[in-house]
Length: 135
Image 1 (cartoon, one colour):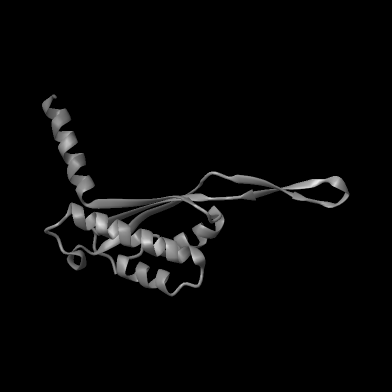
Image 2 (cartoon, helix red, strand yellow; image 1 turned 60 degrees about the horizontal axis):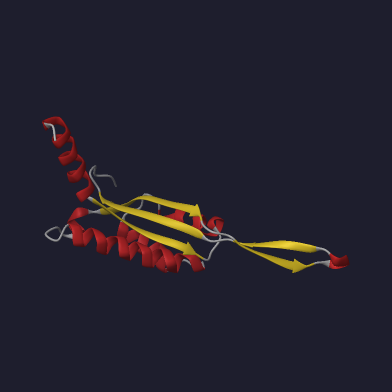
């Protein structure tokens, strides 16, 4: 490996050490409903995001809370010597994508049928240390 390529690889590796992510695949909720909750915590500090998700009434918030706790645990396993409170973790990125769709038929009047689409989603949550201090 060339010296510039190695330096670039080391820089990327160092950047990735400060972030951790967690994924939730094939969650049986429509992506639209999940995005409503995901928008509440995007860019927030982890402590505030956990409290938002804990007291939110929507069903998707319980799943996102569990996913956020998983991302925090992943960050902690990467940075064993670091302290979570001192790192000021924030939700850097949260992405909700559409997953597989189950297609069903519901009988309709006069011999017709309507298609029912049971949607699912994939959620990717990225947690990272706050580099710039903001209030």
